Image 1 (cartoon, one colour):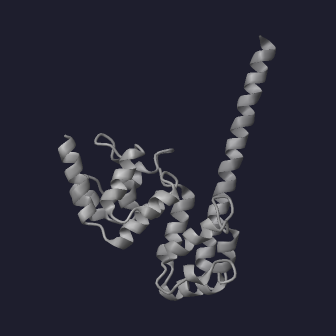
Image 2 (tube, rainbow, N blue to C red; image 1 turned 120 degrees about the vertical axis):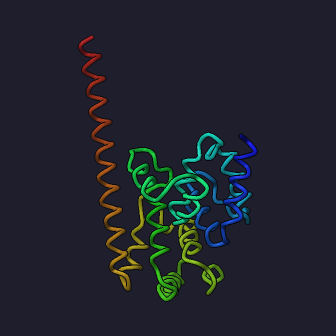
Length: 209
């Protein structure tokens, strides 16, 4: 069984290119520290790190499936993991099943949607906030987003700067950010409401006792 598991990871790693590895690393930032991910240069090392963190196991490949689904490697889902786009869409609708955060999904989606010219515009508008050495011509949008995170320009509860930048030339993507902000506020409100309701129940129980 273990042999089959490692053979599976080997076969998948052989099918991934550098840009896809960068995407997988980016999508895993909530589970593996940035410093560790920056040292990883090949898919096999990435999979080893996921194993050490308990994110993938021989009897639980759900996170691996989600990652491949997120980067649109449906072919690997089908040939290696007995899954499909439809199965994953259904699976990830179950509350708590997705391990890639809404925030990370948003940023990755933005990086995928931007054209090379768009990325140049983003870099130009960030010249004051990020050193030019980090905004070289070959720097991908994912790298730019990572630099924005490192410099505290964006975070899960504050994507205002990214929204302000994109509204200048990609109003359609700005709308996606607004939707994310509204959904996040709604989730936080629901959590706050549930917490208050639970507290009230506990107080009532104590009073009654």
